[in-house]
Length: 337
Ligand code: NAD
Ligand code: WQD
Image 1 (cartoon, rainbow, N blue to C red):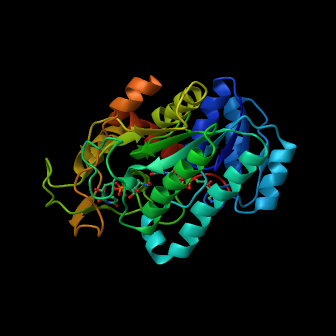
Image 2 (tube, protein in one colour):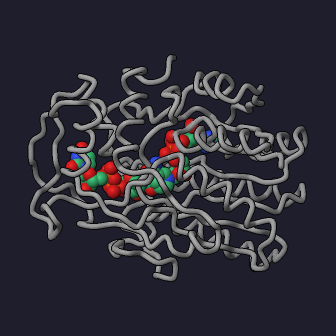
Image 3 (spheres, helix red, strand yellow):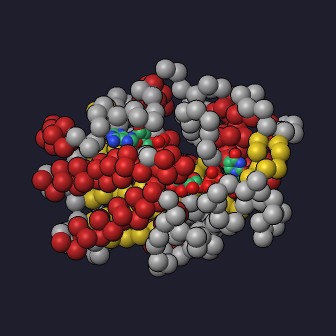
């Protein structure tokens, strides 16, 4: 298939591009580089050995999106583009609603005009709200912050569009906590500013960019008192997108919803110790207050994805740390400008 990857220069998009090309698909990238760098594309071309067409514009621009679909033949879309920082979304709700909903409106409009019927959408475990333990897809959705609401709303918008257009095929993929990097060490997560997420923060402590890890609370009702999450290797997650794309070609119903997680939870201290094993020495940390809005435990029931997509996450937490560390060591300041 010729696949349009929105947000293809971002963390999860870039890893998915590599696997799409390896599987024989043709890839077209659209990204405004709001949270990524153009040099990602050079790395992707080196990894895949292919020239990758890139359209650099804001997907909310309907005219440019329409022009893209006129210029390029597209069979399917994987829609990663969006803003994703929970804390920032509380400060800038309008930007989050405009960007995340606006990109989806613009893309789906152009798809309809050009007869493109397959879309894989980046949703999140955040749509389970406070109820994230052993989450199954039938659980009611809700959110605790504007970012989360953009995901709940986009899921609903896509469901409504599917009712009105039953020939469309949508995959709503609810990711748990993506971490890790491509085994080459040439692409990985490159947060701008202070990392919000645990593993990029630990990686920056390990490489000497941050002094110590702040562990947000050790008084949760968990194995060791620190928060537990379902960390999934980004390459397992990327593989889930290819499986979903295949499933869309044979699906009878217009919408499929799948959790992409491992089904295992790892605590903050367990993750820190796994990273210490990868690095070969201890890393400094301090216990601080809980972070507002955090749940104690979040992990998937990935059974539906395992059964229906024929997909399963296989990489371990140690694999995630080894691969993150390889990427961080080789690129201490992320991608070049
Ligand atoms: P990312 O920020 O690395 O990638 C998103 C990409 O989209 C960036 O390259 C950014 O420049 C681009 N983009 C943003 N707004 C755009 C716009 N208006 N027009 C064109 N391009 C635009 O994020 P990621 O971690 O790769 O996440 C990808 C998707 O997965 C997002 O939708 C995110 O909400 C979702 N998700 C991420 C996580 C996670 O923890 N990383 C978890 C669950 C869901
Ligand atoms: C993991 C654990 C923290 C940083 C977020 C979004 C979620 C999804 C994935 C997009 C928690 C602890 C963290 C630190 C710490 N994104 N922690 N010190 O919060 O599970 O999920 O990213 O959809 O919507 O909310 O991930 O990596 O921020 O935190 O102790 O410096 O690590 O308290 O227990 P989270 P995270």
